[in-house]
Image (cartoon, rainbow, N blue to C red; front, side, top):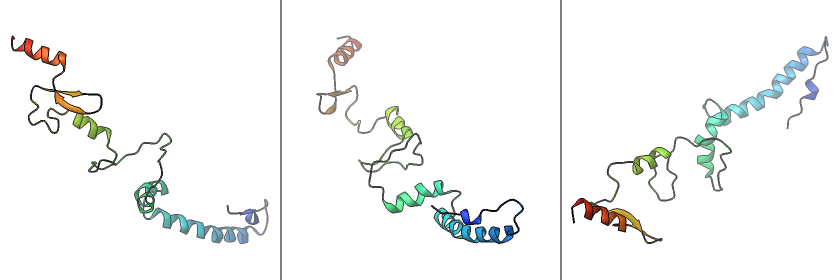
Length: 132
């Protein structure tokens, strides 16, 4: 942490201009470092996610601490995060993926694997519908 106590000015002190100039010169290095870290972004925070995390390669769990993670791309790999909008689009789409040959069937599971099939109540409902 920087120590700027040498630049404190007493009220009505005659050395005010000298201390002020010294303080400005001392701060210039910090201002330059901040500007370099911003890399043209509006703030350090804006630059943090855009450049620093991306270039450093985030290798640990990310704790958002109440902040939202925004601007995610559409996932293309199994281990990529998906947005709520992406998941909603799949969940509520009129045509779910991989439905060829699944007409009139439901998603069922044996407790380990999901598949297209008919559950007992589903099969009964179809039989009732066709008047069997």
